[in-house]
Length: 72
Image 1 (cartoon, helix red, strand yellow):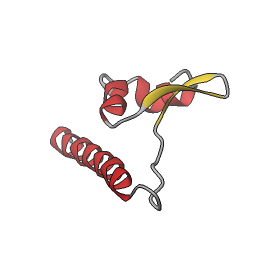
Image 2 (cartoon, one colour; image 1 turned 90 degrees about the vertical axis):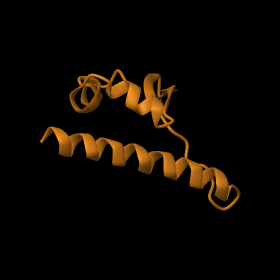
Image 3 (cartoon, one colour; image 1 turned 120 degrees about the vertical axis):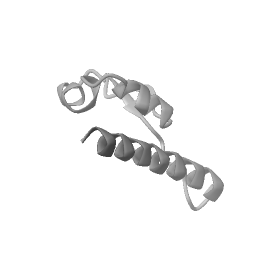
């Protein structure tokens, strides 16, 4: 979140941070920097959790692609 590339790529867009939260990302400290982070469930031990995690990311991407096509 505080990284310059994050602001350049995502943070500068209206709703950019909210999309990450809707996709299951949470703010966490990584090497003393506040970052949006998602933890991939262990597919070997939690197939249902992994499927839910993957499907949420996939659905978020599909929504973003639809919006990009509509605004192009």
